[in-house]
Amino acid sequence: MYYAAQDIIEYLMASVGGGAQDSEHAALRAAAHSAYRDVINARDWHWHVSEATLADDPNPSLGSGDGVTSFTLPENVKNLDALITPQSSAVPTVYLTPTEWLRIEVKFPQVNAPVYWTALRDPAAPDRWLVKLAGVPAPAAYKYTFRRRPPALRYMGFEATCQKPDTMLPGVVVRYGSATEFPTSSFGRNPYLGEELWQVPGSARGLVGEGKVVWSDYLDVSDSMYTAVLSGAEMWLARLLGKNIEGATAVFNKDLRLAFEADTPAPVSGTRRGWSLLGAARALGYYTPSGPDTGV
Image 1 (tube, rainbow, N blue to C red):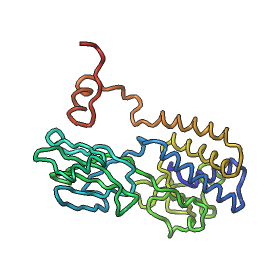
Image 2: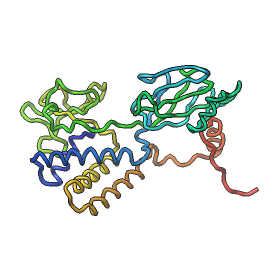
Image 3: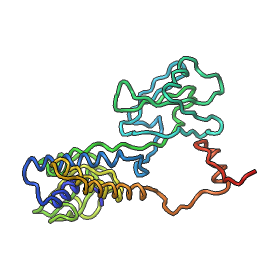
Image 4: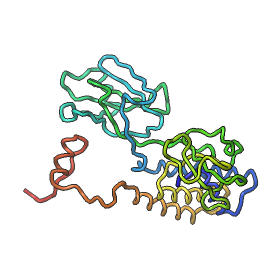
């Protein structure tokens, strides 16, 4: 199943026993928004790791001059790792802090120097990162891994527009009900019969394309993160309604710690040994692990 903003609102309505008044609906929406923001920013989640190529960025702002090439990264890039090239051993990339980068701009490095790069806030787009490279030979060859930044929640599934098929936005979770009933979440009175991510090929689950629909924003979280979002929403709702939040905060912190522990793509992969520990990592150039402390 896909987690959607509709699930948070219905969970809160079940938790507090309703919420028919406008003021309570506003509190539910604010709690859902705040809890989702807290969880997705709590750490650099493995769940949010993605990869891209500089030349393949949707709206690159490419400008070359004095040996410096600049790229404006997509708006969903939260932070990024080292740049990777097919010739990483021959042309290493070296990250510089913004302060160190000023020295590069004043005095460009000599021939055969490493490819220096840095990341700055783009002055032309305050919510996006600008990557600068000095001495880059071929921009299309550079790949990078990054943590994506999910967009903030907007549509919770209870707005009038969220029951109209012709207003659906790309990437939202669309749920299909019967011919007479609007669908609820999986624990509601009228569980959905099918769902899909709108305009995402291959995302259909169950009976789709028929019956009444409800759509809402997609929650870009794993199973363990979703539990933390729900408990975080309870904490925020208690806070917004002026209630005691100590108990709700303790539950939220517990669920968040469990999400931290579960956030791994290969939980039983073991550890790297031998050549894979000391050889491959150094050859790839992204880190140099410590060897065993066995003495001389």
